Length: 490
Length: 101
Image 1 (tube, each protein chain N blue to C red):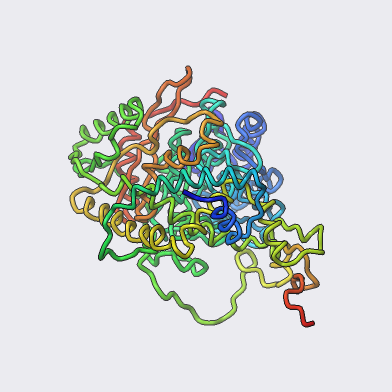
Image 2: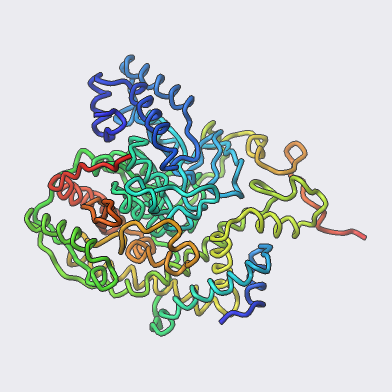
């Protein structure tokens, strides 16, 4: 087995018992990137020299018996939404091209302090606006299972890098499915934690009442290991919850007598039949383990995508107002000092933002504008209450909810780029989760054949607020039974 | 449905300069998205409270003390301004906005 194929757990054990060094592991991953990233294009930037330095420091710590813990020496990549001190951070957008943050995001900083080797920054849809990584202002990332297909998005670079073994683990962000959907389409594990569980300080904001940061990794245990390293209250993000972070990875155990809710809306017409077969297979596994399967209904699913695509652009339009060409980012002021203040705003934003960012800013301005605020935005905030109540009601009867992540396997590059509505509908099962704030995971459960290639299918597990442990336990039960070990041929 | 003026109005609110071609394209695409929202029009939400965020937290305060940290909170205003397009030392240069004439 090549070192780059290791999971975090495996690599951590081998580092701990002296079987490998972080330098060997890091070099193996760097070599893998060199060999396959020309095809996948997951990385915007590979931090080769810095990674080697960090790996050497990690090995020195270990030989001095002062290792920082289980993540010490593990190569991890970050979605380019996360600021890393003195390293260009662009959110895959032209307007932030050349932006070098003078500080770390809390998550990057926590990973560094845990000894992780930050190996690079990954591609995504610009400002995380998208479900395919085609909205990156730089280039499209390919799905490692079929290079003609999208990897999903917006955290497509992190998911593709993980699936192609171009890292040991990665970090993504999720506003309406941006961790879960690419994880599903690339066949890796992606966790959207509870809203407020992980700090967003230093993370380029998309929609602040929905955004969360979480792991995209190769195993359930790995997702627990990352979450316990990055979660927790942060003074620099006042939305973080002051709730102790459990040692999820040590507590993981198989489930037996749990109540699993199957929402009928997630199994209705419109979802690919082969995808549903794989989901049903996972349900059988839980049944055999002793779980009680209970039919439930989440009626709000039918309109949740609309309320999501009202609230999210509204918050986007507000968050992206800071790109004014005056303080940072792309600015026409750099070359032409003979402009009015308004000229600078209009010209810098007009040239700096890509089409999807422009669409969302305008939609957001529209639903927030006088005359439409009540019909759209205020209504959406009320519908959001109904979505929350739907989940609360469901969780009175069940411990966990199960369904597909994406209604289809990965689609072709270019298929939906000019049809925003079709693109938005690919978030139909993931977008309702964020307005409710509850945690959810995408777990790989099988493959479907499309165009002669195996394409991964992800199962979504949804738990009540702060219910990450039951997600880990349920996912672990399925993962240990399925033992999927297929890898993309690259 | 949206008129071209609606789109231009929104682009003005959004401080976005658009080409004529973009105005036409966005008009159709925004119409399609707004059509998707039609499904919420008939849902009765009378008497339902609004939710703006789900953390349940409010009024998070701390002591008004300046704290620095090399990696998370750099202490030099110079560091924070490295990305500013035009500046004079620690001052950001902007065009004149008030004419005194």
